[in-house]
Amino acid sequence: MFYKIRKNFTLLITTMAATSLLIVPACGSEDSSDTEKPLIVVTTNILGDVVSKTVGDVFNVETIMPVGADPHVFQASAKQVDKMMNADLLVVNGANFEEGLVDVIEAAESDGVKVFEAMSFVDPLESHDDHDDHDDHAKEEDHDEHDHDDHHGHDHGGVDPHFFTDPGRMLQVVNQLSDFLVLNFSQIDEGDLLSYSAEYSKKLEDLDSEVMQTLSSIPAGSRVLVTNHQVFAYFAEAYQFEILGSIIPSSSTLSNTSAKDLVDLSEKMKANGTKAIFVDASSSDALADALAEEVDGVQVVSLFSESLGSENSEGSTYIDMVRTNSKLIANALTG
Image (cartoon, rainbow, N blue to C red; front, side):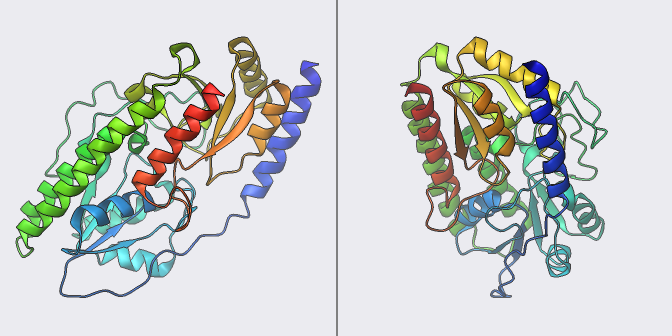
């Protein structure tokens, strides 16, 4: 039986690896804006929404990654690279989340572009990658010291980049970003900026309370997550969940899994009585579907975990994304 399952998983993994070579870079926002205002260019659409809400109309904000983009594999166009190189401020997630943009970010910073790296302003969690064959991240034991004024050499090897699954940490970033902008852009209307920032910070505080209430219906014994890759560690820490396992045992979708990994995970799920596998809407769920077929009573639930949804979706903003994810998780684990 194990041989048959492993053989099926191996064939599926091989097919997906070949298909991944066909990924085509997507285009981001190219609209021109009022040149009198400083331009903030943001890498991910999640941070793009957050930054826009934080600064209101005090800055022009443009986002590089379009809706549905997988930040781990996204490659910028020549126009997008030029936009990043000429920004007044470049806001990035950091910790190698934007794996295809690392060289561009470093080049922009070397060329004098101010860079605000969100991961430098939150309490990080280690990335427990079982397979790290696409990168040589060195684990670091001490993540307590962050130089918030000098962002040269952002070395976050071994750090999980998905801080945004915890709205409490996103609140930290918003508050630090507001302070950073006041210190570095004396020409702006400080009062307007602080007003927009305070308003959005309050919404994030309310969101955190709302998520706690939504998840309160899940019994302690059912607070167990299986995901398509390691993306919900910050969420799990904030709301008292256990991560049973991940299909791709890495914080990057560029890493690989194996048939043995999937067989082992399926056995853990059977022993645990797992009810759901949570996958990223921006990534393939083929492996999750195959795994669910091997474990009775398991549903595959798609979440907005690494990209916002389309304009009319339930994940079109960061707040909507977190709110929707918490409802979907609660429904799946209490149904």
